[in-house]
Image (cartoon, rainbow, N blue to C red; front, top):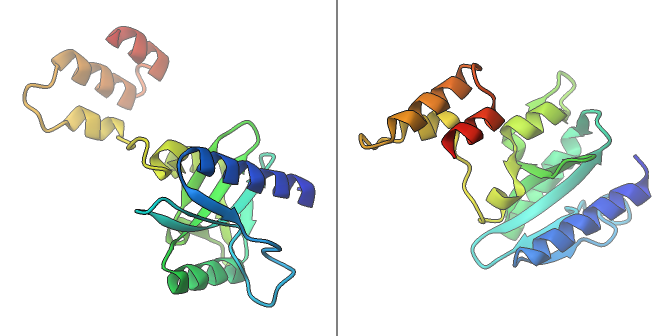
Length: 173
């Protein structure tokens, strides 16, 4: 990926975080022009403070060196922020990971595949506190004995692969 595209994606993330109510800044010359390794983006909303390493890809897996992740973690700890890796694949939204949740290769680098980001990453609304992710299993188990039995059946059908999400949405309308 070109440096210009990476810069554009970082600015996009900064703008989205700003619109979500965060005080946010893109670290100048992060990654190369300073002696200290800086995260790409710093963001906080008075409750949550993040140091973010932002990466994007057209579809290939995203790799980070062990040094990048170590520098992010070190900076975040000293700054009082939570370290996060923000990934964005073309035609997808931003997804976020704690460095400890990333796959570590045999060579000590870190990898995020597109399918992993979509399935396991924290999406932007959850990251910014606008929503909370609930799995189908959590929704089906709801804990409430008064949970609508039809809802439970539909969620179980989706979980078992018998019904897709669109069919489930139609059935529940």
